[in-house]
Length: 107
Image (cartoon, rainbow, N blue to C red; front, side, top):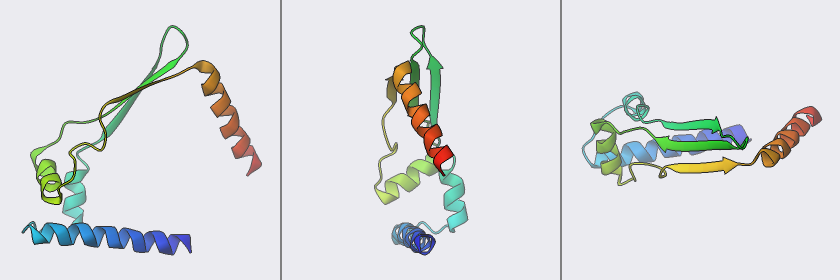
């Protein structure tokens, strides 16, 4: 049942985006839209500092002009989020790994 609901949701989302783009005279098939939008990526870089803490920085790549055009037509923000930095102390990282490994062994 969940698979059916996700399929309907995906169809509704694709149809809505294509409809909004056609209203702005942007006629491209879905494969072309996906190909253009796949040029923007979110990159996460993680490194361990001298205190054995994991420092992660997440940011989006620079936009190409076709991606900007689609965002402007849909009136979406260019980046889903601003650059984020997080520091995870080693104790919390161990605790989360233990919970994850416990979940894997329970299933």
